[in-house]
Length: 297
Image 1 (cartoon, helix red, strand yellow):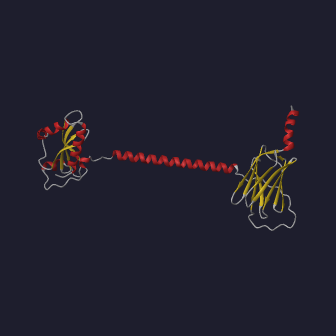
Image 2 (spheres, helix red, strand yellow):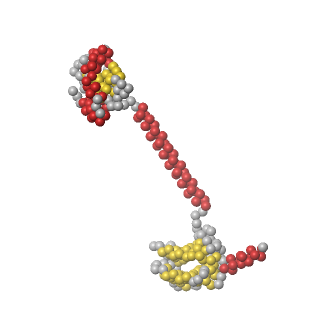
Image 3 (tube, rainbow, N blue to C red):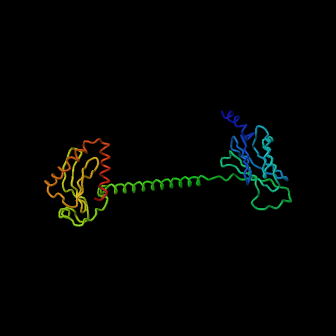
């Protein structure tokens, strides 16, 4: 069994990592060449410079066939990838002032070759270039990733808390508005001051305003006639699906139940005509009485 496993691993030791694909990314400030391997590449990278040619040698790397790529960039003009036994030669044609930086991904499945101008001016070397090995590609560490994750979680929690607070405040305001006493449309205007207030109006109107029911009488299951006092005015209204103003009084306000019944008898025909109307005609009559209520006699 061990012999079989050893035989299966022989190709990996012989040829190392195989290049599956390569891509060239031309940017304004650089050109990146990205190589992707089928297994982590653990071999050594060596770089040699000869004029406008940079030769990169990858040990323990291979590719199916030579690749040639012409690049129309001020950093890189031509790229050649050629297998050389157990190694891989990458030849880049560049201008004299372009440098190359190589770095691997954290899992060693990828290799990036970056061609760009050096950050600081470099003196032209008078001695032959020395082979050099690049360090691994700087990648985002797990700690940094975890910190970013926690920051996103904290932002989400804060956002949820703000939404919950807004919802609670809106609910409280809505409840407060619903609990506030509302003045019916019939009394949304301050009643005009009469020249002389009658004894009845003074007796039934409380200081500081408010609506008081002087008399009321049910006509059926849905309608009631009531005498309401508001300020120094008294109103005879029909209460039901709609509130209809039948009359307004400043003087000669009914004081007893008998006087109220007598007043209703005088409005008998008006009430009967309303109940005989179709619903649409009742709404039209309601609008007419609403305009009447908002005016001044």
